[in-house]
Length: 187
Image 1 (cartoon, rainbow, N blue to C red):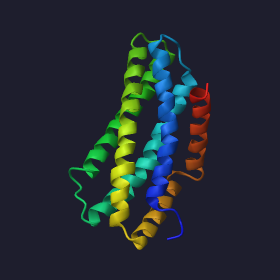
Image 2 (image 1 turned 60 degrees about the vertical axis):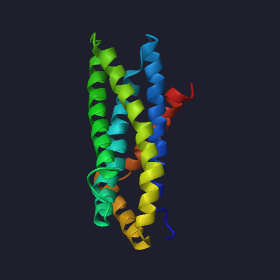
Image 3 (image 1 turned 120 degrees about the horizontal axis):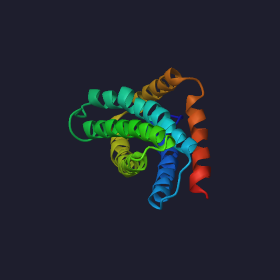
Image 4 (image 1 turned 135 degrees about the vertical axis):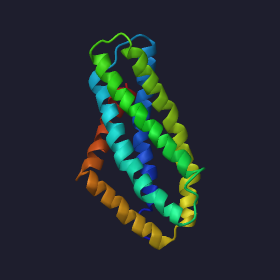
């Protein structure tokens, strides 16, 4: 196999997601100190997590990787697949909550700051552990289970997921993560 393994692609996506999660931690500290945070930055984070984190990244896992592992005998209930899927669902709820809290925060709603903190903290707590489970448990297991042909076919299916989301969408959100990283993490 000459191309990257599908798990390598997913791990690279984790590094991009981690930049945005790190920015969330910076925003949490600012909010806890009573400082205002940038609305556009919050909107960008919510959009990044919704499109790149969920549609691009989780989409590949849930639509292609997990079913293939199920075909290879990995139990779909229990650890690791249903546990990771549950965390994806939690992430979706938190991102939806973040988008809603951002709208409230922009309108200067009294409870917006608390809600914003709750959603950001939830995401900042969820993702490092989730990523660790995938990088150090799921992906090594995947690479032991899938042969070269399986890996190649999965790579093709990953490309189709990207095509369904839209041309250049993946790269657009990688660039957005870089902008978020520069804005919040390299101050």
